[in-house]
Structure formats: structure tokens, C-alpha cells
Amino acid sequence: MSKTIVYSPHAPEPIGPYSQAVQVGNMLFISGQIAIQKPSGSLMTGNISDETAQVMKNLGEILKAAGMDFSNVVKSTIFLKDMNNFPVVNEVYGKNFPANPPARETVEVSRLPKDVNVEISCIAVK
Image (cartoon, rainbow, N blue to C red; front, top):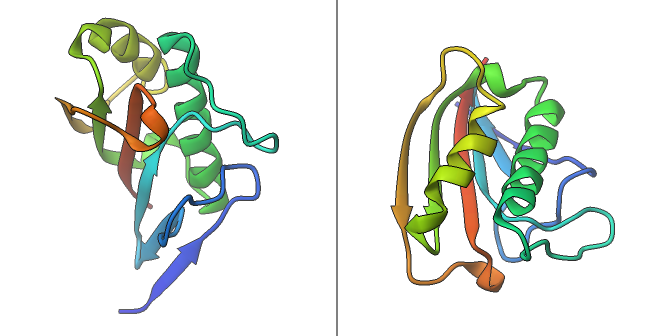
């Protein structure tokens, strides 16, 4: 099976040697997204609600580039710098999955790229 690199000009550029997403067959693997705004490249880290909304927007743009949306997501992983932010992150995240949410885990980590507070990755299926 071949792999296809998926790229959205409306999502942030990768900050390392990785792709925004890779599609293999009907499966899409989206790299962890942080709250970088496109096209300015500025980070949103002052408010966890706004930061999470930007992360979800970035994920949505990549899904759209692959011809999918949040209803295609079957698995996601949330990385939090502080588990005390879980209720707010969960609320913002949940707005994108009004029915049949995907499988998920949420873990607290000591540090994230660019010292952000939240990073989310996901897997989607067409």
C-alpha cells in the first residue's frame, strides 16, 4: 500500500521533519497539532480555551485537505501540560464531536513543543 502526504495551506507548517498528515488507503494519520495560527505563525497560549479551539481548527483544516471532517475521526490523543486544564479542553474538543465521538486518551506530559499547553493528534478513516 502506498502512502500519500496530505498538506493544507490553511494549517501550520510542520516545525520539524514530519508531515501534517499521511494517508494510507482510507486511513489518515494527523500529526500532533498545537495552537499555531496560520498565516501569522503566532502561538496562542494565553487562554486554554482559545488555544484548544485553534488546535481543533488546525486539525479541521488538515481533515478538509484530505476530503474528511471530524465525523471521520476514529481515534485521538490529547497531550496536556497540566491535567487541571482537562475540563476546559474536553469542553472545546467535544464541540467538534456532537455525536459518536472517537476513541481517545488524554495524558499529562512535562513539556510540549514550543512550551504550549495542549497538543492533539488523530486518526481518521474515510
